[in-house]
Length: 424
Image 1 (cartoon, one colour):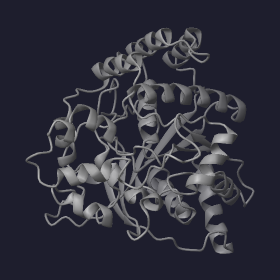
Image 2 (tube, one colour; image 1 turned 180 degrees about the vertical axis):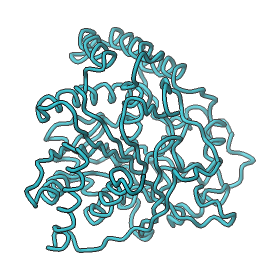
Image 3 (tube, helix red, strand yellow; image 1 turned 45 degrees about the vertical axis):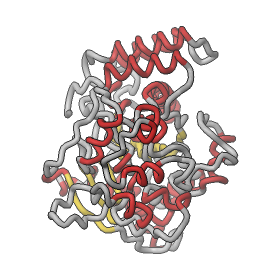
Image 4 (cartoon, one colour; image 1 turned 60 degrees about the vertical axis):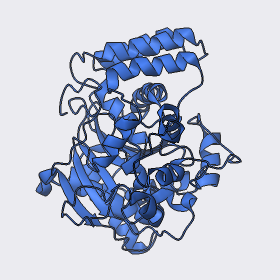
């Protein structure tokens, strides 16, 4: 979906991505904060600066929620209607996906969605999750210091947390908020027109970035007015201090006229983002996806996940295939709101975004075993995640990307894939 994607859902294909996919094995290398580590991080910072990168935004949500989207699966089928009968192992798999039984969600956690991108929320998230699927303030400050330590660049590094309300309405509202944040950020910190900003999104935050790419589509995007219209109707039906239509209209004009970014190019990296919303590459710069993956299929198709029903229910606790959230939280998975107005907005968005065929749609997409998004370069990386730890410590292979020990590896691979001219 290189151009004019019009907010359409991604497709699930088992075809070889060809030269869009590369395979890596995680190597931590030098100890974090050691003199050698600081030196190589400074070199990477110089490369980013030479590529025109003026700012980096680290972007994530709440890691201890319904990551697998099992709520909607139960709402439309699952065990409630017996759809799992006749598919061996599926009942055990659904039990592993549910927040009440997968060991990830705790009702007593200090913070729950919707999150706010404010200092209090960030501090609470850091205390609770630390570096598990969460770019901590300490991480971002340490990263900024390391890449600037040679004094040759003044790159701005910020942190952003999205609401983590993971359904169509919640994601659209999150994308609107991110658009506004980016417009203000660029005005405050980038005084000259041009240059690049790098957005690095973990997990479901990558869905917000996919929507962002569709909002930023060059030219007259056919579906964009409809998305704003659906959101506007919902805001009218549910008045709130942030739900004022003049705000929405002003943003629509900025996006439609191409004035929001003031000539700055947005490059995007996703970390373990499940394949759902399609990408529109006409309004963004470079696009890269990094996925925890183990190439151990017996058929030699290294680009597909090692996810084969019914064995998945047995292998998932041992993390033998990589990031299971990225594999399983595909089409058909979501939270489901209780408010009738929100449910109607989701139905309206679904008419624009994707065909929805219930529980069977999810089952069909999962069985495709697709790892790589339709657009952008994909790095399939074997991360050493320990299965003998608690689910809250590894998120079934989904929590490894945001650890400090992986910082240099991540940014080195990003620079190599996006900004190294020798790689094309």
